Image: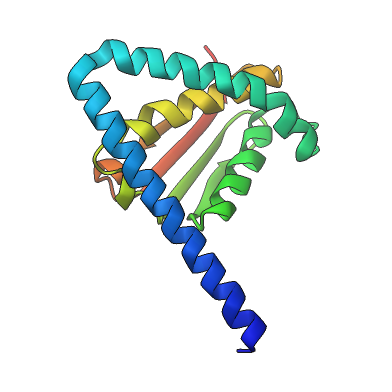
Length: 161
């Protein structure tokens, strides 16, 4: 490995550590908030995450050149996010009508164990907001959650009922 490659790997390792620390801090803040203020706090946060997703959706759509108006649009966004933080998984179903991804390795799940609601409730709210912001009538569900202790994360993108 060249000196330049070693420095790049060190930077990547430092970035991964920073992301993990951020996740731990976010998890602690979320756990305190939920323990102190209960379901009302979770519902309020879900609303805020969804609103944020609505704002970001069109920007992401343009940045990733997403033209699809179906489940595959969110699949592209999920893949981009997974790649950014080294999440390993595969799409076990991927069609215009429905997409299901199983993620087996997630470096940030351990940092979110204090508050698995971040992955199970807030991330899907953000994703659904992104879909709404792009004008796509689908919803996102995280049916299984590594941060909660499940053996995998299962992300489901499907039409709204």
